[in-house]
Length: 99
Image 1 (cartoon, rainbow, N blue to C red):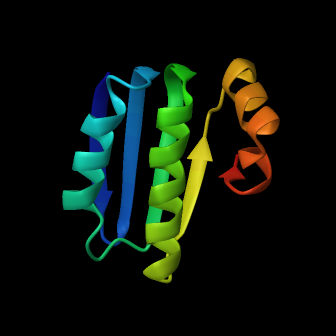
Image 2: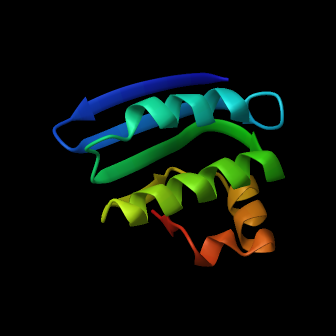
Image 3: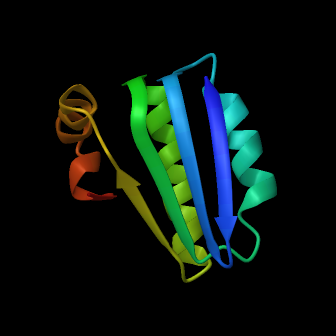
């Protein structure tokens, strides 16, 4: 998985490529731990993400909770139909802000 970060003030955009699964979710989790200080708006760009597993969903939910604790907000953009189906099936489609 490739992670591209772009920070503008208190907004952090993270673009993810390929798959967010058991093998790659620890990488994203580690990146989030060092990147979320002073972030009020976290945006994930899923334009090039092809797959997300339950391990990836866990990391996304942890990021969502962290942003809530910081009085911030998390948005996921450019979600493919396949990943949207996973979000809907798992119930996360109702939890996350998806644009």
